[in-house]
Amino acid sequence: MNRLVIYISDSTGITAETLGHSLLTQFSGLEFEAHTFRYIDSLEKAQQAAALINKAAQNTGLRPIVFSTLIDPVSQAAVADSQCLFIDFMQAFIAPLAEELGQPARPAVGHSHGVVQEQAYQKRMSAVNFALQSDDGVGLQNYDQAGVILLGVSRSGKTPTCVYLALHYGIYAANYPLVEEDLERIRLPEILQPRRRKLFGLTISAERLHSIRKERRPDSEYSSLRQCQYELRQVEALYRQFNIPYLNVTTMSVEEIATSIMARTGLENLRPGPDILPIT
Amino acid sequence: MNRLVIYISDSTGITAETLGHSLLTQFSGLEFEAHTFRYIDSLEKAQQAAALINKAAQNTGLRPIVFSTLIDPVSQAAVADSQCLFIDFMQAFIAPLAEELGQPARPAVGHSHGVVQEQAYQKRMSAVNFALQSDDGVGLQNYDQAGVILLGVSRSGKTPTCVYLALHYGIYAANYPLVEEDLERIRLPEILQPRRRKLFGLTISAERLHSIRKERRPDSEYSSLRQCQYELRQVEALYRQFNIPYLNVTTMSVEEIATSIMARTGLENLRPGPDILPIT
Image (cartoon, rainbow over all chains, first blue to last red; front, side):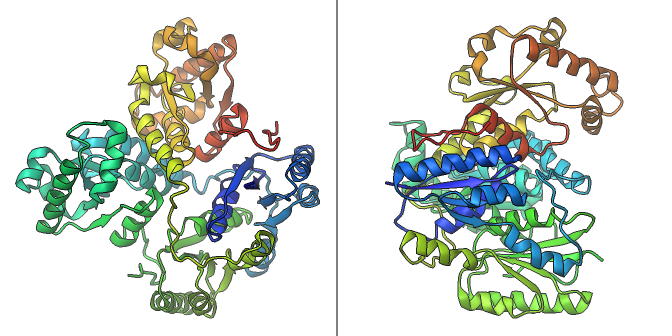
């Protein structure tokens, strides 16, 4: 039986999910069944959660693993006392931070983005709209606004990467769909030529691309292994010929693709600060 | 001077950023300058990071706060020994988990998504493509595939929410742009009628909408406060008339909107499991 994992939070649950998931990937060969209890922002809800955890422990004979970012100490205690391995992601770190910062934490339940971050938040939302408008070469006039223009054959991961960069980092990311003729002639489209410094290429193994395209259009020339091999050979030749940095994304998640591009291009807005530079 | 915050990771850095940011929001009134050192996957890079941290500590006279998800103990020690408050998000939790799970952690540096999660990952990528194809009423034939169809006036947050639900949770989310006439007549478009159980509405304060729309089209009827007030009054009347659940997103981030919708609709795929239900 898969071990039950519960993420519990007084807010979105995203922090508990993110760190909990990272920790679980350190234990190979095990399978987990995960659920998230979000917006547990009252003692009553915390008690309901504890009751469900106890019931699951009895039904399965194994105590669930609970990853918590609950802030309220009373709610936290209610859950920690249930039959589980309770792992607290917040309280453990609050004390050393409070000491370092010289002020106590303000125990805010369900903290939302403050006024300070308003500008950064609006930039992320604008960047999402930009990514959608600039997807697949639509909105060419937007290329001057782009921080990066991704190249790659169809289904190599350009669109999800653009969306991720926008949604999480407020980076204006566009993508350009190279056409048959560009690939055949190993030609950089005219519109991209003055923007060469913004280009970043994706590539992928032919087998992987074949398998992704088959899902979309089985039994087509488009999804055939031979066509995938041809397009990838040409696109990589193009990257090399025009000195476009590129990344093989075969075994990478969209999170890894996006952050690797950021790490390699220095795309993150590193404001002039105390001599902190990207490490290469 | 803003306190310097460093997120450091042998992988994407996303986990360190997520929990570190959550912790910092617990301390109000302070400002931080944050940088992420990603893919610190060798001792040499860890030593470079430590040197930069020391230099920053000397330049600013304040030791940086370092949030780490480094796995390799030697790299971790190199950074922890620099002039910083070192907060470790991984090692502290690995030991109790290993004991509970009855097996040691496999210290995998730069862990990528495994074969097990391949299916879930492909679902997320398909959902992103679905969200883009279904944005703003394009691709009406896709509505049967949608897990949720968001309603709301222009710029109330539908598109970023759809994209978030897709990218992070693999939820097929579409949105429908109500037109002038739908609002005027408080009319549910015909195409939505058989899909009423999938509908979820967004609303927002008129002042906030006015401010968002002004950025896009200043001095237009579209962005006038009066027009915003009118549209919101009508759309809320429509939600009430057709019993469509809805959410006021005025002070919410896209993460909060997405997870609130999931919590309220039970959209997450709760597979038949040991009696774990959403808590309401």
